[in-house]
Length: 287
Image 1: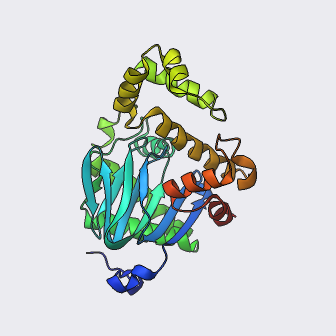
Image 2: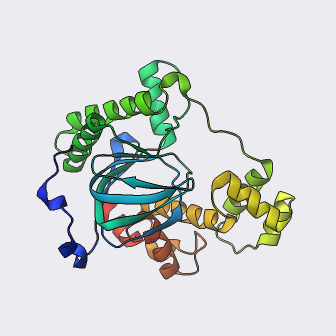
């Protein structure tokens, strides 16, 4: 079992408290996003990340749907969600606390290439949750050190060691690494069109013409390939773009229209729903 501080204990009496979040970025690790949070009420809608979602539940039960299966992460279990895998998230019971990292595929590929001495693709973790107490302890040690920013060498050694061990134990090891699979050409064309016209309004018939499919066939094919409808996928990408602009120093009041949101309130709702913090909080935490 993980040794957790008393402050992470969640009980019925704490239900009146607000959710607590802390977000920071580690520039020396390819701008690695790190997150620690306690959620008692917040419910994440189905969404994706361009990066991996890798972390450890500290207390309570973190529940989410993943590939049609309800996953429950208990204290000490490790969460592994691959890029572009659809998932949601909600408290199961009285809430949960966790520590998370969001490494990009290029970052993990670079670590693995350096370790193996050859170019490799991005790993694919086999299960969305793993019970590996020793590895979970390594992750928590690294995450706390990254948060404190005082023991950089310890943090780096533990973090890299964790990612390498995680791939070896739970992603088939280096020999099993494969590049991302192909997808139907119609889905690729639809994605390209949505990205190219992200700031503009579009409709299903326009997308269907671009894809060369009927509207309803496009929805079925797109959902089968991505786990999301074209609209849900577009909102996800708009949030990703907004996050990138914030990281580059943009102001929330200026980027809503750039990302295709109707107004700042629309951006704020979509951003907080998927990341757990508002655009303004995210920008502040990165400074």
